Length: 375
Ligand SMILES: Cc1cc2nc3c(=O)[nH]c(=O)nc-3n(C[C@H](O)[C@H](O)[C@H](O)COP(=O)(O)OP(=O)(O)OC[C@H]3O[C@@H](n4cnc5c(N)ncnc54)[C@H](O)[C@@H]3O)c2cc1C
Image (cartoon, rainbow, N blue to C red; front, side, top):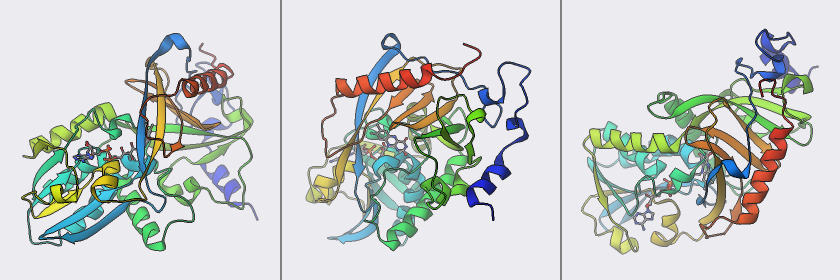
């Protein structure tokens, strides 16, 4: 019997990939399965425009979406999305909105204005609620602005630490978010579909289903490519599509949508839970990300530091590469993003020059070996 993978591979390979030479330039290996040219990323120190770092709000047992009574208020938590908060935001916002809507009220405070707070605030408005966002920082000064923006909920929990109840919540949130983001695909929101190439050092194990195989219906054009079906110097390459969300376009647009729908914003830093409970609104939705550690004494919440170096935008590059020795490349309008690092329990926001070097050298070596007939 053919393996699941070989069936997938056979079923999804397009005629385009069947080896015919392309009349434009190169051969089929120089094009994505959708027929877009795969151009080399130019990486050098002279092209670097910035290096930044951010702290992923991580809990090994996964994000928290739950309602709690505190004095005369209902507090709905929606925080702790790790490396997948952009991705999951509309999904966990939906779950939080369902909890909040069980009350008879129509007025709420949303704490935090990152991707999670903004999505939550918008969904409450869509349900006819009067919403005020309270936050110490707004875009562009949130962790959500640092995110790469690939639609894929990765580094959200540790395998073996999650409950079946969480897994069900996670899948629901993921499916909701996957569907919701498709409404936003447009230049105005900075959301688009894009080819991803996952570079693996070993052949995929047919006995083990990885994350993208488990949720294969949310990773279209999923296929393993043979050596002559891609332009990279790599033996094992997997392809699928994801959405790419550009935080510098997307977050301000959602903020504008919030204002257009009559939302109010107050800049305010809360010191502790008692401070939060002085708010007038009967329902408080907590979307403070890592801020919840101190505000609501969540000891499980830790930062995972991530560092990114950007080189100047390269319009001709229109695909994602991930998994190249732990590195990743996302082509964005505000620059070619080169990652990545995952440092647990590291609170410093100062980029580490050794990591910058590793990221730059790793990407330069990889792309120098890529076949680009247009270069
Ligand atoms: C390098 C890097 C790459 C990433 N790449 C991706 C990716 O490709 N895809 C993806 O889905 N995710 C990615 N992430 C993860 C993503 O950035 C986070 O999961 C997401 O930003 C969390 O959103 P949030 O709204 O919960 O938190 P934040 O964006 O941190 O927002 C929290 C809000 O709460 C406010 N706040 C906090 N404390 C207080 C307080 N005491 N009083 C008042 N206000 C307060 C803050 O000012 C802020 O407005 C990445 C993260 C990093 C660092």
